[in-house]
Amino acid sequence: MAYTVLARRYRSQSFDEVVGQEAIANTLRTAIKQNRVAHAYLFTGTRGVGKTSMARIFARALNAVDDSGKENPDIAAAIMRGQDTDVIEIDAASNTGVENARDLINNAQYRPMRGRKKVYIIDEVHMLSTQAFNALLKTMEEPPEHVVFILCTTETHKVPATIQSRCQRFDFRNIATAKIAEHLREVLKGEGISAEPELVHMVARLGNGSMRDALSLLDRLLAAGEKKLTVKLLDQLIGTPDRDLTGAVVKAIAEGDAAGALRNADALLHRGVSPEQLLNTLADSFRDLMVINVCGTESDLVELGDEPRKQAAAMARRFDAAGLTHLIAICDGVRRSARDFAGGRALLDAAIVRMAMADKMADVAALIAGAATANGSAIGKK
Image (cartoon, rainbow, N blue to C red; front, side, top):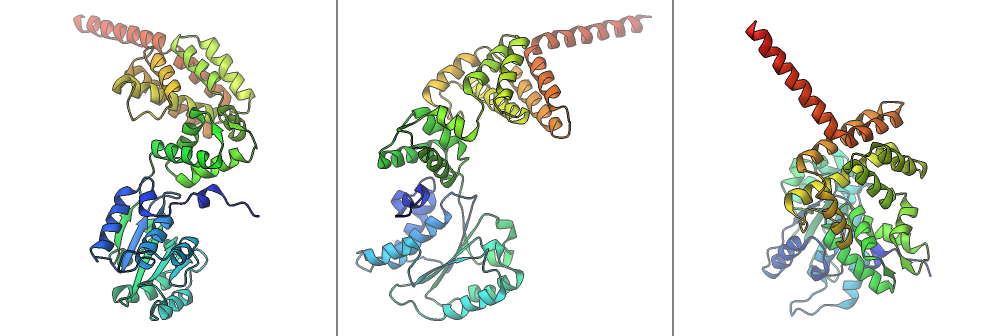
């Protein structure tokens, strides 16, 4: 049998299973209970945050449940597979023309075959042409009472204001790392696979708020065929900088050991890490230390597992918040410059030495400023 990816097999099937968009799920569920279902909805948000899944769940709640509250399992299953006759899913990216919109409009006149509503889910609706939007607009102004439109998009600004004004808009936010990690643990449990706790947290963090991206990365890890998923496997798979070496660079900077910082940075570069990638990693590390320094070890603003959090807390005590903001600024400035500079390695090495010698440079700057002030005073007296 063909393999079905995790993102499809573990897709939310009901409002109760929705991860990270609970407020929207509750609002839509309440709208059905109170018979306040609008004729058009606009679901917007970045990729992989649950827009299409929510649209199917909403359609399921509308069409698979009768007036007594009993659900028809056949209809429910067909809707969630995207194969129900009354829930029509359209990919606007491949159906952009005005003729496609006209076909949709003509078919909308016919009543649903077995459900209460005829639901049109239009994915990536911003891809429709101007003519297609204009053709759709009239139907959305005065739709048949049995029709519900659910428009999904990642680029709301490309959807005409005339269309948006006729929809109830719901903004899907990026899913918190903690919620993604919790779902990943459930998926691993369902797959019968063990994993290091820190690995789960790192995969969730690399998802960048997208559940689908996190599950796709987990799929890649599972494809390796290992009995236990480890951080080392993740590093090998996607080429992330070695955490021990990165930590050694940060430690050397904290100790003012420029030579040690350069040696460890060189080891990372020889493992295939680019200067830009290393600077990004260092900036992220300094950011975590800064937040811990300012907000405390248990701050929710730091997305780290238990053991890395303890290590970061110990390292944060070796810096002050002001110094860390300065280090982050150095990483960002050099990363920007390295893009347009052929000698990216020279800039990286200079940045590392500068960060390791930050205290000494501050002392020199203070001496220069003091000398300038003294000279100014002397000139004034003359």
